[in-house]
Amino acid sequence: MPEQCEQLASRVNKRWIKALRINAEQDTPDSVRAQIAQFADAGASSILLDAYHQAAYGGTGQRFDWSLIPHDSALPIVLAGGLDAQNVAETSNLPIYGVDVSGGIEVDKGKKMLPRCVPL
Image (cartoon, rainbow, N blue to C red):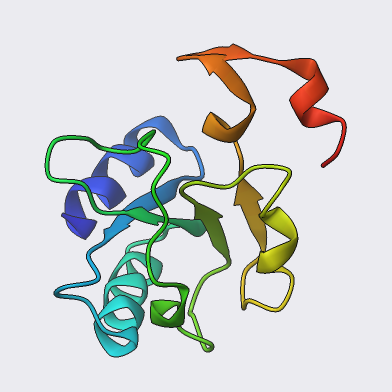
């Protein structure tokens, strides 16, 4: 998979971010670190970590076990999954570059609600 991402990015000459779904039942900090390193070697500019869900690729509003986030990532990490104005402050001590609160500020899929953005 890293090779496919690298090939596509080279064709369009764009930077890219890889989303990884973290499965708390299978992943460890070492396995997450290794996956990130593979995509760093393939040229990713950063990694988005989200919760694994069997039937969905993102947008589930579920968090994963943040202790699985490696402290020595080869790439900047963007954290996603169940984040909103009420809990985003809990991420302040994590080894991450940024957060994705998209679903946490939506009233319907793809429909953002400005009042939910203000507290952020």
